[in-house]
Amino acid sequence: MLAIIHGKIKTMEAQEQEDGFVLIENGRIVAVGDMETCDPGILQDKKRIQVIDAKGNLVMPGLIEAHCHMGITEEKKGMEGDDCNENVDPITPYLRAIDAINPMDAAFNDAIKAGITSAMIGPGSANVVGGQFAFVKTHGRCIDRMIVKAPAAMKVAFGENPKVNYSGQNVSPSTRMAIAAMLREELNKAKEYEKQKQKDPEMSPDFRYECWLPVLRREIPLKAHAHRTDDILTAVRIAKEFGLRMTLDHCSEGHLILEELKEAGFPAIVGPDMASRNKIEVKNMAFKTAGLMSGQGILTAVTTDHPVSMIQFLPICAGLAVKEGMLPEEGLRAITINAAKICGVDDRVGSLAVGKDGDVVIFDGNPMEVFTRTLCTIIEGKIVYYDEESGFLC
Image (cartoon, rainbow, N blue to C red; front, top):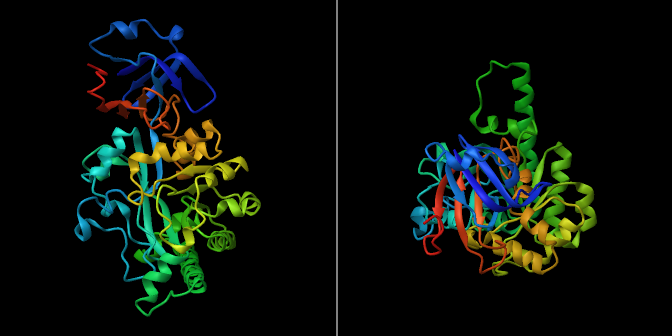
């Protein structure tokens, strides 16, 4: 059992405590409250309970990266460590992120040191359909033991990336029309497969289409790479045609169509705004987008899209969004509970609440401020990092 005491508890839910505690047992939170309500026996049972004195520092849920490619596009390894895109076939829904994520990638350690305890990881955007994302914890050596949800989303992509990748190969898609048409064709085939499966539950599974069933049943969303307004609205159009859940990833020009996106009702994962405008479709990207969208009531998260920008800068990206108009509380929600809701895992992570995973971070200030240090990162009740230089826990 682990007890964190005398912390400024920010639960990301209604209640906050200026001098509070969090109690974790068997990897789950079993109590959160004011120190006045804390059982004195907790502080005395040294054999059974490990006690961390937060010393008035900020205690909050672990941060969440809602869209990245760490462990699939590995740092320092070039082509040998790049498994992000199977860019010889535009339709690859059967690919699974868990078969390519390498937890030994240095980015996982960087994430933990930044207080990021979980992440949505998956294929890139070279293909119209890229494959299945997985939501995982950032600590571990065996990806199978790190999984929170897999599959967690189906990656699809609109705009420049599929166009550029396949027009050079003299095959479709070379236009936005072809991207949309190919996705519709694939979804129609998947729906036909679903109908056949309903008629004959004993039929042999088709590997290519079995992976679409969770999408068609609305158990997981499409994860739509879309930067430009026309690509965003095409994604919305197709998702509505087929009655699918969807997250709008990047959404760089979302601030230009706020009314339409509010009406559409899909959540957005905005970013990476800490990157160069190296493509025509991102010429209007800006840190103001996340705040303008959340201000319209659109459920919004912030992403680094690691390695496009480095994962350890996730809280700083949220801070820059706040600097450009996002409400400070929404900035924190964009990398905690909002990200958890968008990824479909808010029953386990994203806030400090009884029954949720014991993923807790102690900061010496607001994590969105550049000088703030991560003092301690805890995943499922286990201390996975602490700041030795600060003397914390020493």
